[in-house]
Length: 380
Image 1 (cartoon, helix red, strand yellow):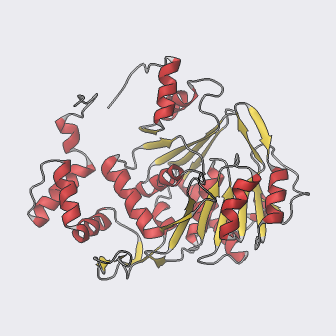
Image 2: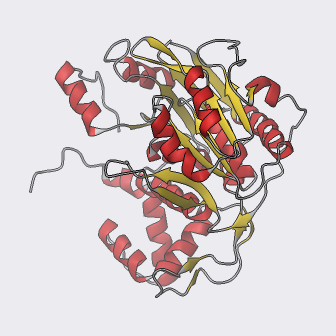
Image 3: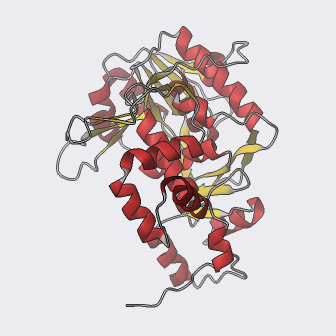
C-alpha cells in the first residue's frame, strides 16, 4: 500500500472534535475506541445512540426533539429519523448575529463583498418577509438561477426560513437545461442575476430569463439582482422585479417556521446524461445533521475557521459549503473561472482571507500541478 503523504501529529488528533466525541462515547457507553475504524463500527452498530449524541453535541436548534430517534429501523423504505422533531434549517445556520464576517464573496472582476453575521441575518429577514408577503408558504418551491454570490445564500436561507423548498442552477445553464429541471418543480418564485462573468467575458442572461419566465408554469414572480450592471433594465422580462425593490421592507427579525425533521429542504438533480434530470429531494433535518457531522468530525470545522469550496450553485457542494454557517464559520464564495485572470487567483484569495479549509476537485489540483504552482508554505 502507498504510504500516506501526510499524517497529523498525535496531539493534533487528540484535540479534534472527533477525538472528543470518541472520549464521550467511551465514558458514557463503555466502548473502547482506539481509532476511526472503531468509531465507525460503533456508529453502525449503535445508530440511534450515535445520532442522538450528534444532535446533543451540535446543539441543534429545534422547537422540539421528541421521543424516539429512529422509528421502524428495519424498514427500507419506511424508517423515520427523529419522527417527533420540529426544526427550521435556516434557524440553525443563522445562530451567530455578531459583527464577525459570515460571507466574503469574490468574483472574476476582482470585486470583494463582505457581510457580517448580523448583516446576513438582516438581509435574510427582509427577503423572508418579502417572500411571505408574496404568498410563499411551507412546501412551495423557490428556484435560483444564480451565480455563487451572497445573494444566492440569502435567497436559500430566506426560502428555508419559511419551510419552502430551494432548488438552484448556475447561470451558465442553457434554456433547455433550466427548463428540464425547474419545469418539474413549478417554482412560485424565481431568483436570478442579470448575468455572470466567465474567463473575463461578461455574459448577459436577461434574454434567457425572459424565455424561462414565459415557459415556467406557475411562476408568479422573478426577482433579479444586479451582478453585471448596477441597474439592469428588466422591461423585457415578464413578472420581473428588482432585488432592492423586492426587499424594500422594514423587517429586522425572522419568523422561522419549524417543520418536521424530514420536511423537504432542497431539490437537487441527477446529471441528465441518460435522459431528463431526475429530481432528488433532501430533507431539512437529514441535511443539517449530515453536513454538521462531515464539517465537525471530518473537517474539524469551528467558528474560528474560514471555509471555501470552489463550486457553482448547480453542484451539491454549494449546499455543503453553505451549511458551514451552522458551525459559525466564515464562508468564502467565488464565482467565475478558476484560472481567470491567471492560475493563482484562488490561492491569492486563500492567502488574503486566511482560508483554513480549501475545497476543490482533483481536476483543479492536477491543473495547478501542470501549471507548476508550488505553495510557499504548507501549514497544518
